[in-house]
Image (cartoon, rainbow, N blue to C red):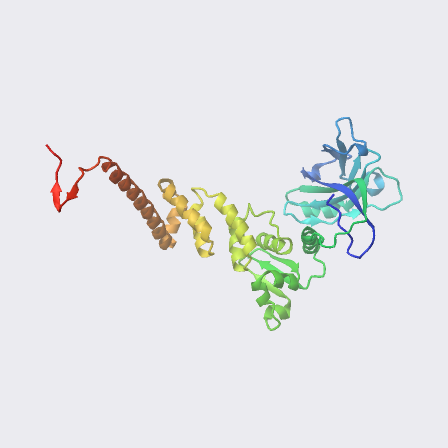
Amino acid sequence: MADIVGPMRPSDSWSTTEVRSLQHTHVWTVKGFSQCECRYLETTIKIKDAPTTMAADGNNRLIFRIRLHPQGNKESNKDFCFFQVFCNSNVAKYKAKFSVFNTRNEEIPATVYTGTQQLNGYFEYIRRDLLMSHIQPQDEIQLVLNLTIIYDTVTKSSQTVNTNIAPEPRTTELAREMEVMFKEQRHSDFTIICRNEKESKEIPVHKIILSARSPVFAAMLEPHTEEAKTNKVVYEDIDYEVMVELLFYVYSGRSPNVQNMALDLLAASDRFQLPGLKDMCDQVLRSGLMVETVCRNLVFADMHNAHELKQDAIKFIANYSNQVIHTEGWSDMARNHPSLVTEIVAAMSNENSSRNSSSQLQISTSSSDQPLAKRSRLDDHIVRPPY
């Protein structure tokens, strides 16, 4: 627990209580879900180094069992799928929340069981036909269980109040709640539409958040614009997944999938003037330069003003030129971006010049190792050494 500081309100004495807990997230993937005809599926979570006060097993582990009932747990509720979690310890205190996703990372809402029937553990359920429609055609679900395990309560008291110490900022709490706001789409007042030849998808968002985070969105949402009047904007040149990831960063400051879509996010972050996300993409791309893709990365870096990525890509190509010039990316770049080829050649030329200058300096230094015959001046006449 963090060091206790005095209360915001003046007092002669005070106390602080902290409820201590630990977080654990488990992801369970079930493939071929529609083919499952058993009574239930089960998997186990073993949490190591659990506090002894929670009556863990002999190995000091707390064990949770997760059960998936594909067709309910009895005849009367066979039209529902149940998700169940229970613990091996009767004294363990915990909170649980299930989240159900398909392969497109779309969440399917589940309902908490609040019935009067006494059941072992925590339950949530969802209609089976609704679940089946969401997981097609891949026939796969991802069940995410978030556990909050409460293991201790500590109270400290003091009579010495240090009014000079300010409370710690709650930036993590703010980011977490903003992330939930984006996911749950509460109180949204604007819609971003990503449209292509096959489909059109909508993303509900909030004007005030977009305006605060991106100068481009701020200008777009000025009262006189068409977007502000219609409360929507359509993008036909940005993939839905890329826009969702970008907006997730706008709300939370995080980008969980930046490793998989760094190139597309680099272009999008430059377009919407999000320097933090752009820097994250730059770091990922610079650390993953490869012979087959370095030319493509260089073209994107040049187009979107990623200067450090551009310099690293040029150095990489100069060092591995014998391999890079045989790739398809080199051919495309030479055909469509000849100025970049010129920069690469110039960089290689400068590197060779530096090496040659260094070599000549070494030769000059070595040739002057033998001292010249000494001469001295006396009465304006040259005095030569005797024979």
